Structure formats: structure tokens, C-alpha cells
Length: 240
Image (tube, rainbow, N blue to C red):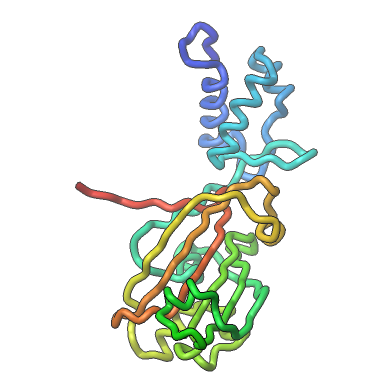
């Protein structure tokens, strides 16, 4: 119940009430919640107060807005543990979801100097440059830009990149993938990415750069990905 005599701000109380209704599935995933006007009348508060509560829930990923239609309960974000090295395909299958990809670009090129440096390439060595939209249950989750040295897998083609690159690369080389170095940061989605990921121009994304290595320390892949921040989150366990 709303307690207007409490030291807890009203908008936070409303936020907790709405959150409880979501967790108890009074508001179900994909359904729209009452409008700001309806909630302001229900709780006898201003629409500004209701808007602040809803905005906080949108920012936390529990709700999402559709312009001209209302506010809806969002699907829970997928959690990606920061342990173990798996491909997107392997990760989605482990969750019981159907992974798929849409190939945007596939070409052979001499990479920019920073990419060549990270992959231990000579100045004239080429890479396959692959751009894919990665989907889970037919919904866009990320856009990946992948650089793979041609010498690692000369036979790579457009058909092969539609599956798990980790699986086919390990099968070809008969050696295990060892480790990866991954860097993450938050950013506002670019215009190109917003179109592919079905996001508004002001939406947040998680930018991830990963360099993957064979067990002998040779890098075989560099990936720069933009993940939908409203559908994906990363978790880690740390111990003292």
C-alpha cells in the first residue's frame, strides 16, 4: 500500500508496487501496464510522480515503452556469466533458445592497423571480415563484427559463418580454443546499429571487444559486438 506519510519518496513506493506486480505476474511479460493517467488516479498522485517510477523501471529493464502504444513488461534480460569461453550459438542453445544469424557482410580485406596488431598479423596479411546480426528466438540480440585471419581458415565462406565459428575452427585445427581477453563498455547505439537491433536512437548498448586465442597463444579471432542492453546483462562471481 502507498504510505504518503513515509520518509520513502512516493515515486519509489510506486516503483516497488509495480515491481511487485511484475514479479507476481499480475502484469505479465509482453502485456502493457496501466497508463500514467490511470496510475495517477489509482494512487492519487501526480502523473510526474508516476512517470518517474515508470522511467526507473524502464531504465532497469523491467519495462519498455513503445511510442504511441504505451508501456509493456519486458522479457527478463539474458544473463551471461563472465566465466567460460563459449560462442553465441553455444550460449543460446545452452539456454534452450534457438540461435540464428543474418549475414550483413562477408569479405576478404587487409584490416586496420590496430586489428592487425591485435591478431599478430604482418602489414599485408588479410582477414575475413564478417558482420552478422545475432538473434535468439528470432529476436535481435547483438551485431557482431568479426575479423578472422585468412591463414587460420582459408576455406571460410558465407555458408560456414552462419553457424558456430568456434566449432568449425576447432574441428579444422584439431586443437582447443584456450582463452580470450574481453573488454566491455557502455555506449549509445549508433544509427546503423539502431536500425539492425530495432532500437531507438538514444538507446544504450553494451560494446564488447574480444580477442580469442588457441591454447598455444595464437590469436584466431577478434570480435567487436554491440549487445542490446535491454536484453542482455553480464554477471560475475568474485571471491576474496
